[in-house]
Length: 84
Image 1 (tube, rainbow, N blue to C red):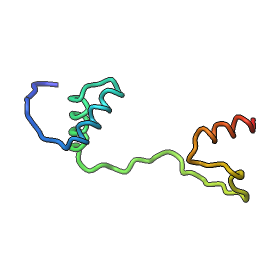
Image 2: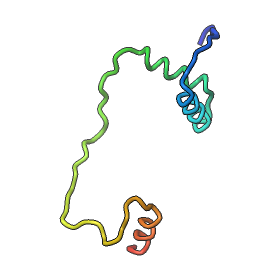
Image 3: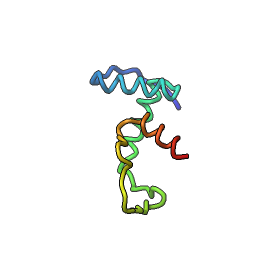
């Protein structure tokens, strides 16, 4: 990669914390996370990339079973298990 230069930058706390968390989750270094982000920013205008297939929405009459709360993951999991 060539030579490296040290610098000091000030970042908002929440941004630095999020970057450190991402580095830990992806088992890389904070330096690598910052370097990749800076390289992406310097690439220039991003071209729109095709994102695969379009989603075709299918709708049907009906609705949620009575009492099923979509915000309760455990209840949804239990419902799915019962219906199998």
